[in-house]
Image 1 (cartoon, protein in one colour):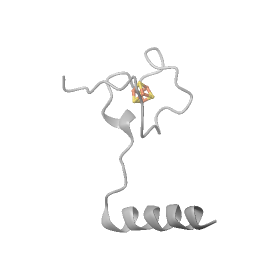
Image 2 (cartoon, rainbow, N blue to C red):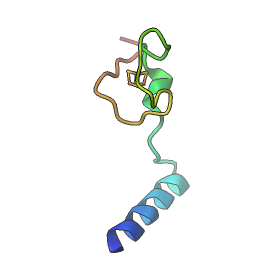
Image 3 (cartoon, rainbow, N blue to C red):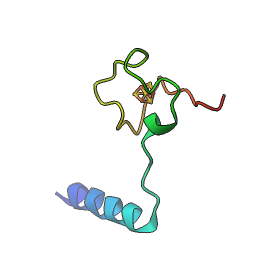
Image 4 (cartoon, helix red, strand yellow):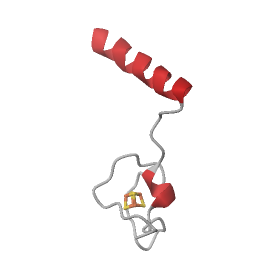
Length: 55
Ligand code: SF4
């Protein structure tokens, strides 16, 4: 129970301080259906397949 409340408080703190992680897909060069079949695209915050568009 305590860890659940702690997670909620951390999430609120990150939202209020602007430290919430951005969606990786927004800057990933595979962010289109033919390149990425991850069902959670485009709202992924952690991904082993991520490749930046700038590199
Ligand atoms: S590879 Fe990962 S980060 Fe890139 S678009 Fe697909 S789900 Fe998003």
